[in-house]
Length: 149
Image 1 (spheres, rainbow, N blue to C red):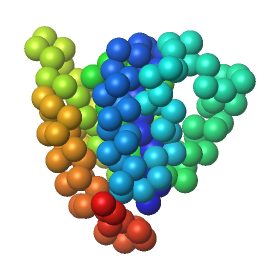
Image 2 (cartoon, rainbow, N blue to C red):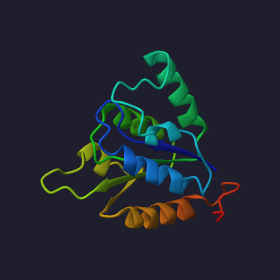
Image 3 (tube, rainbow, N blue to C red):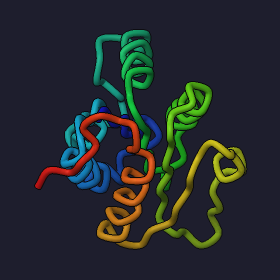
Image 4 (cartoon, one colour):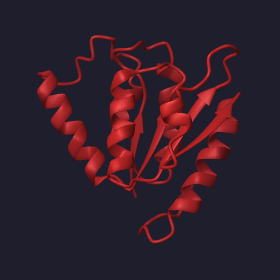
């Protein structure tokens, strides 16, 4: 299974350790194409490629080849929103996770999209349970969808 993980880079790296934990956990289900998103050394400069065009084209190729998308959307990001729009257009199963933040509702374009499942979580363990349920429900028909321990 190929998993596309989305999280803020240029919008802020405050949640990089959360992304890292989620990506490491997701790797037990398959290949996370965007594991660099969880690299705590990656800065807001988004210097994960030689040019913006290279990053765009690389990430779009990964998105196109993925089986499903998991996004951590607590930090609002234009890039993540763009990826989510394309993921739904490509008919990819999409899960958006966010921590509960009083006074900060999720964008209506994400929360109201029929192609996106959204869930709030408080702990990484809770996020793992949500991700596992999503993967197991959407993995029907995807080869290699069982978790290896």
